[in-house]
Amino acid sequence: MTFSEFESSLDRKEPPSILHLALQALWWDAKGDWDKAHQCAQADEGDPSCDWVHGYLHRKEGDTSNAGYWYRRAGKPMTKASLPEEWSTIARALTG
Image (tube, rainbow, N blue to C red; front, side):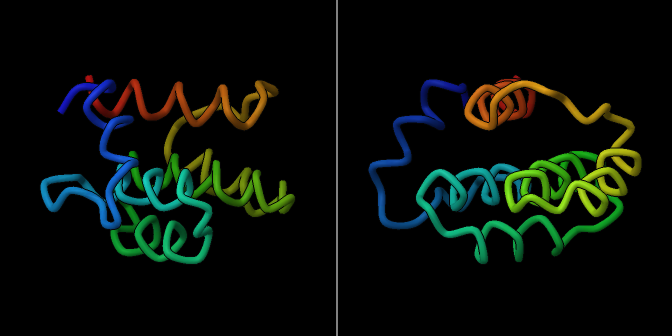
């Protein structure tokens, strides 16, 4: 799935079933459902892409200490970019 297709899928009521859990988490986050996003990110702890999204979600929540833990697990630095910029960066990276 391309980034453009992923963005277009946000018009749906549910994420496409083919999405990796990390992308499902970003999908739910874009729909305003932080809890579902967090559930998806937590469902595959140890997967670097889920850990990256997990860090982003805790950064969004304002829990920078917890976010830092997940960014480190993902091998990614905690960015100072805006949350929308980071969402886009992660989504683009995960959609190839």
